Image (cartoon, rainbow, N blue to C red; front, side, top):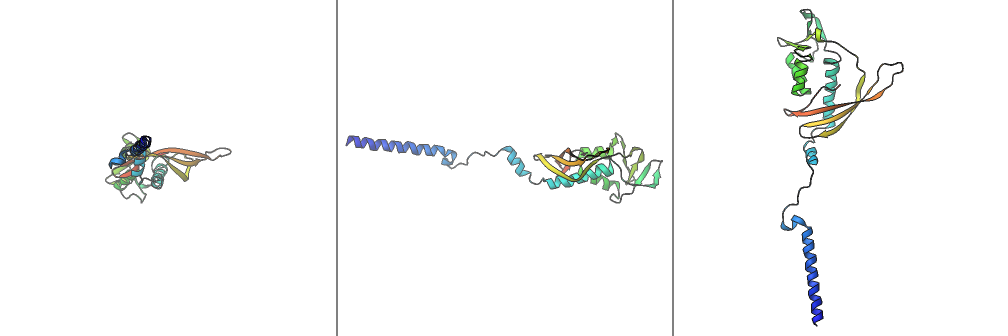
Length: 209
C-alpha cells in the first residue's frame, strides 16, 4: 500500500514539473504581455517607404535624361538669335518655359536643392551660368553653351532599387552604349543614382550621366 502511494506521489510530481516547463516555454505570453518585437529595422523601413517605386524613379530618370541631353550637358535649349544682346545673350525659344521662374521650378522638381542651385547658377562654371534671368525672361549665354557627343541609349532602360530608407533611395539604371567604331558593338551600360526625400518630394541628388 505504501509503495502504491509512493508511485502516485511520484506521478503527481512529474506532472507538475511538466506543466511548469510548458508554461516557461510560453515566455511573456503566460502573463498576458506581448512577445518581444523581433522585426528588423530594415523591414520596418522598407514597409514605411512603400511609396517610392521603380515607376517613380523611372519618371524622375526620364526628366534627368531630358535635362542632361537637351538642357545642360550634351546640348542646350533652342534660342532666338533675333533677340541677341551684347553679342552672346539670347532669349530661349522653348515654349515649355515661358519664364525663368517656370524653368527654375522645373529644375527644382527634378533635383535636390543643392544640385538645382548648381545647375541654375553655377553651371558650367562658378558664377558663369548658361541660363540667365533677364527681367524674368529665360535667356541663354552662348559663351557658356556647347554640344558634345553622347552614345548611351536610355530608351529601354531598366531600374533596380538597391537600398531605401525614409530619406534616401539608391538605385541602378541599365541602358546600352554603342560608341563609334569601324565595327560598332552595343554593350550594356550601367549608372548609379540616388533619390532623396526633400520638402515632401522625391528628387534626384545629382544629375546622372
